[in-house]
Length: 486
Image (cartoon, rainbow, N blue to C red; front, side, top):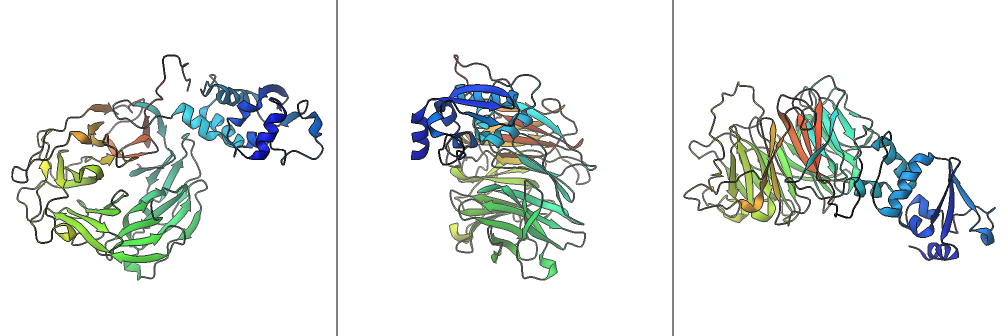
């Protein structure tokens, strides 16, 4: 707190506030709990006070705020006790908007949902039904706890209170992938392509849905179609994959393209994942974009491959549908068309800078389920993989995988790879099974189309009914704490 605010607090500990005609008397200590950068705390700053106010009569002065007194009473109680008690009849979104006005929205967020995501201790916070006329195809989590849902040329955006914001609309283009910038979650990067595979890459304002800037690219039109993207949190960079050119790198602020890196035989990759602890980029080319699986770890500073893997020379290798890197375990988890999990040790073989000329290490399969043969024409929602990577160095990382109408939670510390010769690993049991049939907490059916993890939340997108569920871990309350009403 600044010196001027401390001086104001010393003059009197009693503060009189009139909100919408209702008087409130509180202490300057309680107001100071709002934080030095809040609107409420600025009321005690002598530099902010109107010139008509007599400094000698500060204790008798009444500060008038033309807002809803019922909402202010809830927020004032939050500053006093640290607990959020919302009376029935007050929508959570309405309270959040009022908290934003006073500059204490982070207090509401911490009180109503403040625990790190633990897949073994989650509950369905809400089921949100969209308004699109077509089924959603992808969901992406925001670092701040919100999300976006892609429907063809549109992205429906929700803030952390799950209030819908103005949508992002791309004229005559389909959204291939999008993501929120880690350092500025109010911005999204979107890659798209139209029917002629001529698209682009742009940065939009997540709060307004308006285009901020187009990512600059001096290439012919055949190279402007991007399939996937990832955002680096350390160096403010954006990566996007192009089937023709490989992986492109852009500066988040200027939108300038700083070059392309060839990722190998699999093209630009259908999925990208930034690995902050190693400063590497996972580039995965898988079905249906490729008949074989190609995995590459790119060193974007050296513009070289640090490691690569392919199943081209392996006999009876199942068709791989998704992949995710587990940083602190030096492995990549893959899932096949039978929803079976496999693990690849990135310390073995794989060519590139980590062992050029060595044979590719086979995947070690966990054999959790009996393999099911499915034809390519059979309608099936293949498994999706996500890692809870809020702290990539943590020993308690959790892996989330989907199977039919459930999300399985696995402890990454339970994975123990054996030798490459045996090509097996210890059984990876699910430590929790989240049933989302019927919406988990009142949702849809038809299986799971996509999942994502971010902002200490798990987002589950259903394959139909334009519905997604939000799962989170409730705050850990001590025995002496009062119940938080949500």
